[in-house]
Length: 87
Image (cartoon, rainbow, N blue to C red; front, side):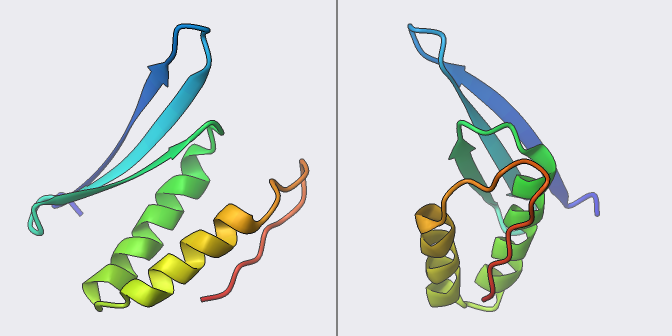
């Protein structure tokens, strides 16, 4: 869809530590949703941004907040393992 753009950026602090920004720009809605992370998981965060936006369009803010809290509280998965979070 040309009315949606995904993009990323990198923030680097004075010690060289990086934070990655993953963004979804909805041109028609005139808003941009971003996630900041120290993990460069592009595909995962873009899918998450799409999912979040679908719920926000339906005014399901509580569900989005619950999802984000569950992800924040969950330990980082090990390599080659899956992460399942239900909304």
